[in-house]
Length: 310
Image 1 (cartoon, rainbow, N blue to C red):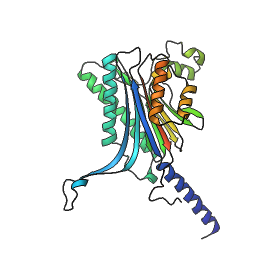
Image 2: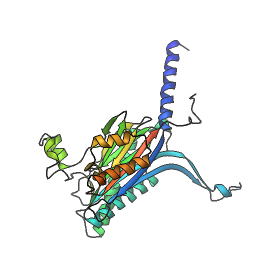
Image 3: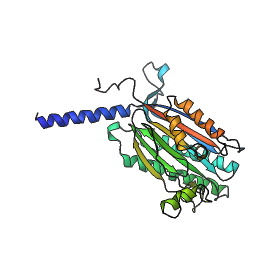
Image 4: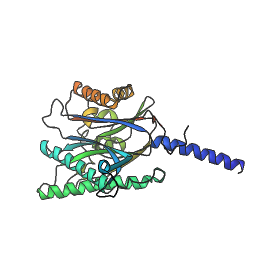
């Protein structure tokens, strides 16, 4: 083998080793939701799910009485936060319906049973965008059957973790953050009219919070042909030590980014971190439903069985 070939082979082994480490990241995830101090119902929803290959044995010549259902290693994670709109009961029903539709889509339609080395980002993004559009179509059908085609909707921020990658599909003003090495990164944009006006140079950022457009959304999963839905898609390569936060705006109304970063930086588990975030939102006023999902990425305790790591 030529010297340069040896160097290329060594570089390839390093890349493969890093890929396996990212793919084997252990995820500690937890979620919390609270009605808030000034609301009488909770229209928020959250979901944390593992995706597995599974096998259900209906019959066999083998003695498998204790193993009729077998599940393989986790193929990925789904994290989701939704904030319903459209009146107290309508908002809660809408966010519930959308989450249920997305779960069905993930189980029955999404192509997440693929080898780690064959992950195609565009395929994942197509799947995630299709999931959001499918959920809107179902909402349209349900609301039309109820003769209610306008005024209901939900924000949706969904994160899909696979092979060391975080893929986010988003609509509305719920948010996805990643904390890394002391820095808090907001991966999603707020789809409010005020944020859009700032982006287009029509409003000063200092005037946004007091503006009538601050909480008016232009992009949501809503009912009716006039409801705009333009899925925003974001990707992030995970590393050990990263902390992921999905939250409804009930958190960010009362807890600023500096405090969010401090809580994510604290050496505590996802469950305790989620509880503290909720507590601070309530202490800060609790004017809205508040929902958080926290996920922490840790290096694997043991290298994968097919790994060449020493």
